[in-house]
Image (cartoon, rainbow, N blue to C red; front, top):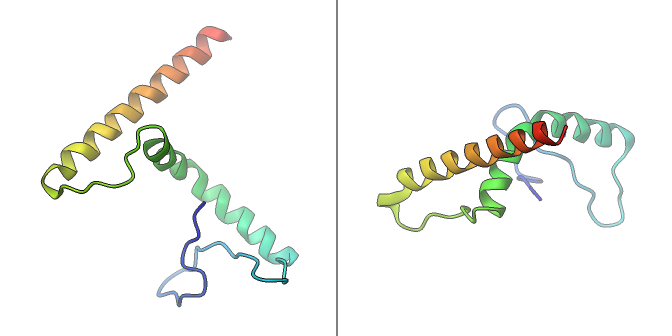
Length: 92
């Protein structure tokens, strides 16, 4: 779950989703705004969630290998997506 920077000042367009705090739920406008933001963010967020959760690529501790590991993770993500598409077509 992405908490963003709730409550921090914004320097540009504010794309951070609103969150309910304490006993104050979100009003209708805030819920609709969050829905619009999530529709825009969801295609890109899937890539990062698969790399983090499936391939455990959330952190890179050695800076010399950082770029090579990131490129390898992207390649692995593309292969996983390709296999998923292929399996979906074979099932249909």
